[in-house]
Image (cartoon, rainbow, N blue to C red; front, side, top):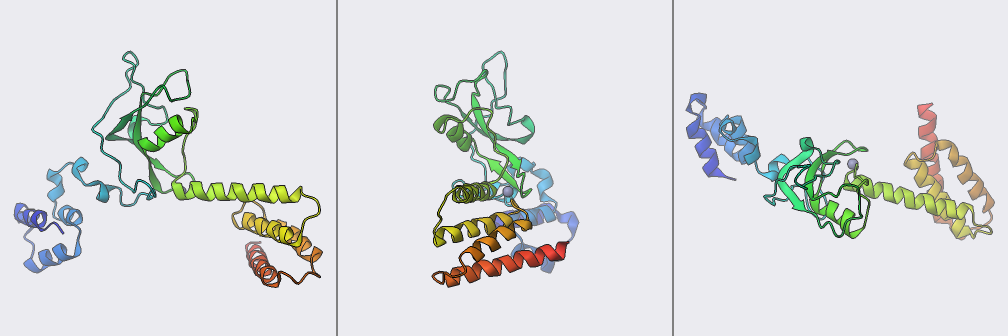
Length: 247
Ligand SMILES: [Zn+2]
């Protein structure tokens, strides 16, 4: 709690004529910046001075870098004549000032125009709609270490990217199993579980539950995996119940 700021806010806004008990409650209940905003104190302070923890508190947290951008003090702008070029995926409107870092052009995959600096940029996730930061260091890793082309872009937050990668992996596993002849009971169940997961993530339609029923029927005499089979049946019923409701 920044009581210094709180008291300055109180003394510099005498026209508010707040009762001392109200001020006391505001100080004990509020974060310094919420309090200062309530008292009109922030009119004197431009938004750029608001701490990152406050401004980016609603952003999706990145496991490695957290929520806030990383201050570098670098603020380059594209100069077509001067050899400075900012990525076209990072338009001015979403760049976070003073958060740029220089690129290592020797490590980038050659392109018609090399990107000389990466910026921390504020984005909105295509899947969940939440705001997230695409960090400059992340872009450097993509374009220099992983050798992604400069056309590659990031449109999803980290949790949505992970979810998408998980779904892609399940789909590959499911398709591999479909093409495999002479599947064991264990493999048939894995195939059924993959299919269930893909229906639950709306990659497959609920009609695909028929395939799962066929798979289960094909191993009706095998009692080795009773618990696993009953779990699959439970998930099946849940999907079929929801599908009936939405019809
Ligand atoms: Zn997302």
